[in-house]
Length: 374
Image 1 (cartoon, rainbow, N blue to C red):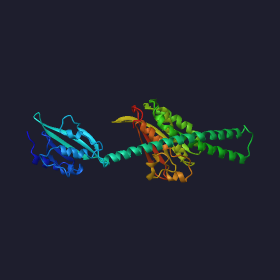
Image 2: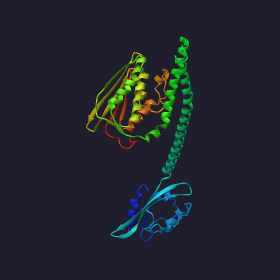
Image 3: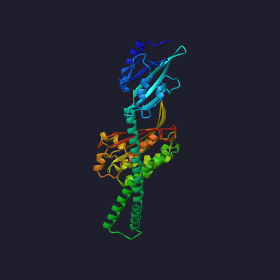
Image 4: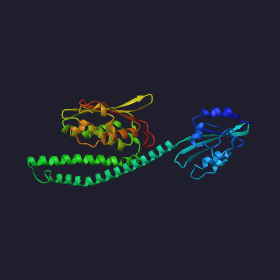
């Protein structure tokens, strides 16, 4: 059986890739213009019936190795796909498709396309990923090292503050008490920042050790709000809570507790004296599953709407928080978001600048599966 060269040529012209059809007699049946330009075959006889060897030789001369495999262009055992890098830097990918009719081998169709730009982009991407990985490791190492270096002098400062506090060192004058309170307050603020940085640098390692277990959400939030109550009262903030009983959630207790504590801490920190922080936790049941909805609302400075997505990024803080002199590293909400995602949940922020903030978490009661799955 023979292939009609005119029909084959007409078909190949409609193919976007370079295309070559070789008959069983190892002669050209048809070739399209795309392949002639791609393989630089302008000076080679590619007319129907021309032998295939000169074409294969012309291509092989453009390859670094002068590949002889192309001489076997019509052999059935030749690889079906391959890539060739030309001396001028171009990279082509080829696909070999034998044509058999009623058990008879009638020829081979070769498709060739230029993947130079694709391979260059992939190489650039790998290089950028490698560079970003190195920068991330360097940042984590620097953060961890700096955090550890700062913790020791801060611990010393706080220890000596305790030694100076009555009755350890006798009574202090009002001015001395003010100075000591200022030192302690700022040392504690620095310690919180250092702890946040250290947490960020070790968070990836902590995720690998995630352990899921049943957690009583109402009891956990009740304890956290009770522990926060003295601080809220000292700051002149009314703390309200509404926790319902419900089914346990599958969670890593330590990571979830740290995230909820950071969320409550933020609410109190950004709420002025006389304000209110409200914490609620209610189970929900929907068609696609059940879980817990936890909401933490405050009447504080609020988050501008244009920053309500950005504040979940590490080290990003809203402008009104920076201008207001509120301490922080911009790690709190990113920690909360990562923990919620780790547990297969969702997080949303509502409110506006000057109108307070409400952060809503939805955590499923089912097991989220292997650690790290969002």
